[in-house]
Amino acid sequence: MAAAVAVSVAGVVIAEGGGDDSPDPSVTFVADGKIVSEVEYGKDDSSLPPSKVPAVPQKEGYTSRWSSYSLSGGDVTVNAVYSPITYYATFTIGNDKVAQVPFTVETKEIKVPDAPLKDGYHVEWSSHTVQARSFEISGKYVPTTYKATFIDTKGTAGTSDDISYVRYFTVNTAAVSEPAISAKAGYTTAWQNYTLGLGDITVRSVYTPITYKATFIDTKGTAGTSDDTTVAVRYFNVASGSISEPALPAKAGYKVEWSRYSLGASDITVKAVYSLIYYKATFVDTKATSDSSDDTTVAVRYFSVENPTVSEPPVPAKKGFTVTWPSYTLGTSDITVKTTYVMNVYTATFVDTKGTVSPSDDKVVATRNFNVYSTSISEPAVPSKVGYNVTWSGYTLGTADITVKTVYSIISYKATFVDTHNTSASADDTIAGIMYFTVNTQKLEPQSFVKDASLRYYNVDWGFVPGMHQNVTLRSSYSPYYADVNVTLVNHFDESAPISLYVDGTVYGTYTIASGGSGP
Image (cartoon, rainbow, N blue to C red; front, side):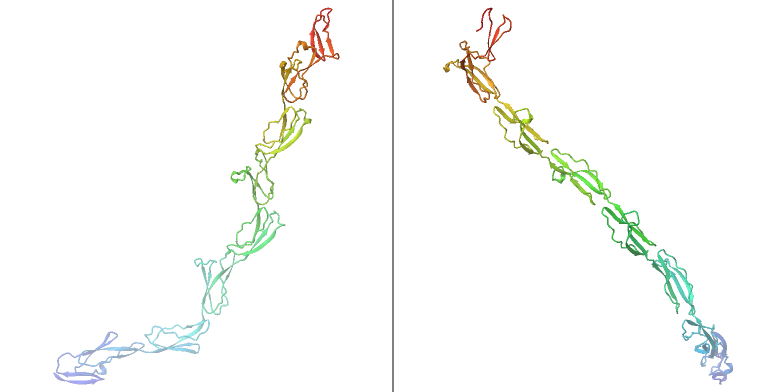
């Protein structure tokens, strides 16, 4: 084996010759994972000659070289090293350079620099791609398009009913075409005030309640309108739940209300409605007691200020009382009419008839008052009359005036007739009879008395005097007849008939006169 000779080529040492029979080592040149070349070198070589070093494959936008290596006597792998070249993108607007932005082919996107601001405009740069060279990107100011979003809320608080409309504008736009707003009863509609400025805007619909008028009118309860007067005016809108009603007019005997109304989307007129009030008159029977538990309702009547009369029910009756309904006034309220019980006062007139049947002789002795509850009255003294028992007639205290008259009962007295037989010796006295008389008896003699025959020509006087008013004993008193006795002979014109002899009108005796005879 020949001795090795070391040859240096371009810094690469290549060993030649030698006495070693082992294969020579190699240098493998690799670019982007692909083998470009394999070059053997001697074990004693310190470098490869430039002629054996392959050119580095080119890559646009990159500088290229082989990586540093050294020959160590073994196989060596040398990789291509690519370094991106820095280019510049020059941004210009018109003649003005805005910026230079460095980039390489590895730059995916060139960052656009901030351009000088211009209100309402933005810069549109010319289209470009990343190239393996420097280049210029020109720009221009273009009006920015903004968005005006019109939201129609339909007058609701929520968003579910919202309708959105979009209009576009720029700094040069004077106005946009506004969409129509949904109508809502009782509201005026408009879009919020807005300005087309330098940015997107949102414009919402504005629903403003319309103010309506409620006019409250007092009709005074009449059908015509000439008496109508305006009481008050209230304002409302469709969002108003209620309004403050004015005080109602008043009219005695009427219930006054405001007519029904709804707060809608128009002016309204509210009129006073007058309703006649019917009041109640309750007629109550108190039964003349102070205990209200005894009260009973007799009847109920209704009345009003337009018909202020009632038909009174019949008044209850109570014996001994005058019952009336008290006076009352039918006004503007319920009333209770209670029976008035006035106890009747009756008169008992005590009359002295003086014992006669002729009313002309009657004389009022006294009067007494009584009522249904009276059980007795103070009777006046009974008049007196000689020979009479006098009492008041029987009566009952009821529920009417009464007249109480004297009742004269004549007294019967006893007359005992004693016949003295015209002697002074009481031993000869005999009872001739007993008779009864009154103060009105004018003459009294014993009816069955017979004189002694020896005294037949004597008159008997019993001494009775009219007007006596007590029991008496009458004794006979005899006196002889005298010439002046008036004798009447009654002839019946019948010679055979008896003849009656009357003395002072009283039959003295009866005789029969024989032919040619004479009387006593």
